[in-house]
Length: 132
Image (cartoon, one colour):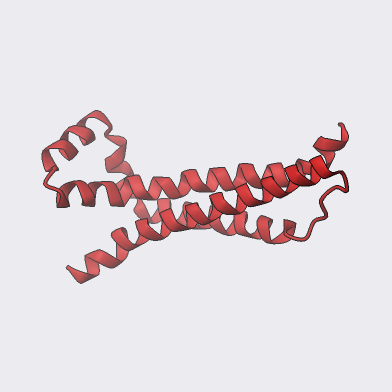
């Protein structure tokens, strides 16, 4: 393992976990936001066609508590890893330090995006039905 790999292993792992967290957060959007928005826009027939083509959407909607549980668990895991890695030293070499800084920023950006996706999905799945 060379010096670049050794210096960036924890940050690359954090980036990967943040990406998986973003995928879990996106699942909440597909589960709950997409159908509600399509119906609100008058695209119920298109939603019916989409459900016919991708019947897994029904499964996601039926198991939304599990989908959100997995998304929130991934958010917690990823957030804990980012919190732990926030003070890890970057290498003294300028090029390695730049790579280290970019990996940190990318990981945090992906985590925040996943948090926003999951929050929006939770609002559509759990809060808006209470208002109706």
